[in-house]
Length: 162
Image (cartoon, rainbow, N blue to C red; front, top):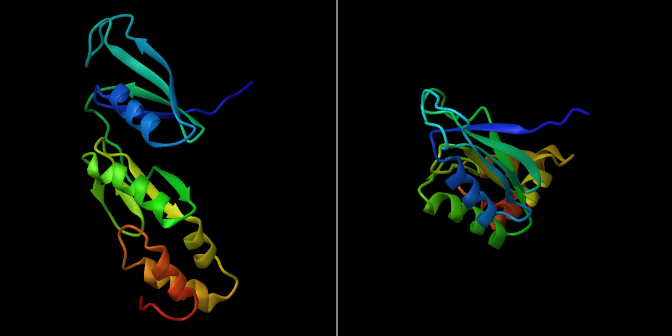
């Protein structure tokens, strides 16, 4: 039976990244750590080669492949949050652990992996059947780094003032 597992390329620190994800997000854990059976271009026999883990229930494997490939925004984890406290918790965990803020709810962790910390209210607003609500919420979001739910809710009722 086929199985889909996301493979993420790291530069020797897959175990550190997986540990951080397991400690930060619910339903996340390291499930296995495998050492290299022989030396390879960016490591030696016995080094951690792969780490199997889950991030919010999504199966992943971290491959310590070396500096050849870098993460890009072409792939990101999108974490749906239910309130501002949860949004702040995950955003702050990523950004204050060596990560960086970006725009519209996006940030990068210290390993260069992109994350979208997305309140459910933002998704509901920007996909609203009322195009006026969707447009106001979208325009409000475009001015943000971390999503501020109160501002999105204000935009939904026609005001972007807090």
